[in-house]
Image 1 (cartoon, helix red, strand yellow):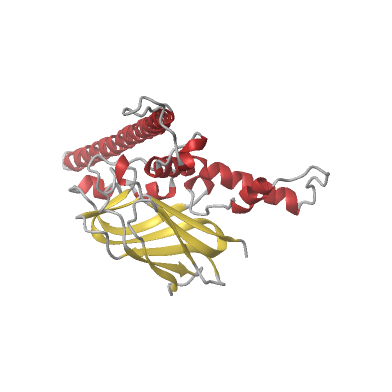
Image 2 (cartoon, rainbow, N blue to C red):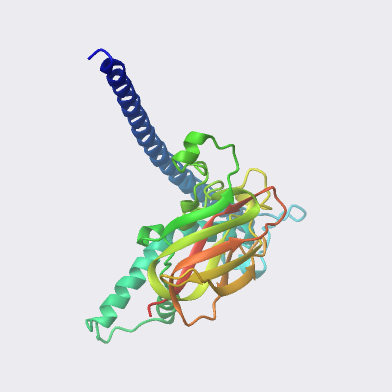
Length: 308
């Protein structure tokens, strides 16, 4: 009986230690989720503040142009060109506002397009005599569904990349190597500086699961403008990359395109057309280079297509 007591004590000790480890992991997970939620709320608040400040700066700039005076003659200055009608040529500010605006209404436009498509296919579309303006027709024709949106059900299956920071055993065990810049940021509409999938170097492979199986027609990448970054530098934008389709139940990839993202100041969102007739739900995206930085940030991926 006495010989069995040490073995029993060891079992109790290991059971106690294992239970404590599980509790520690559970509470760490709860704290991480709470921190993640608070961070998202904070970033959303900063995004709205940035958009409001940009609009106010643009409005003040336009007002100063319209109300400026000729300091030589003392007469009011006469505006020429587009600014004479009450607007001003501030293309950089317009580019920032357009980027932020598109990031916020993208999901809403997708939902509206999806609802319109359901109504049209059900035969319940209104056939009245209300006229449709040209602008309304053009707006509806440009609304498309982003099947790489997290809100619609897209997800990141796996990534092969080097984390920017140091990774300890606990983080690696819990799958938190990219805790500061998780890959799921690529599927979100937030375009605040730092809200990206960040990795060391310029090489990474992303396995993406789309919301639906579609015939892919267009792939899009968006990077933040340098005016919104503290360093005024966007050399961490991706450059050369490839996109492959992965058929169900097969490991043989099909190349959809090889493209280069141009780090142009007024062209932060760039689209690339796919000549493809096959349908896919899983994609493999390989990033091969960036524009000169020691690390790379992928902000937003969008995938458009049609149902097979």
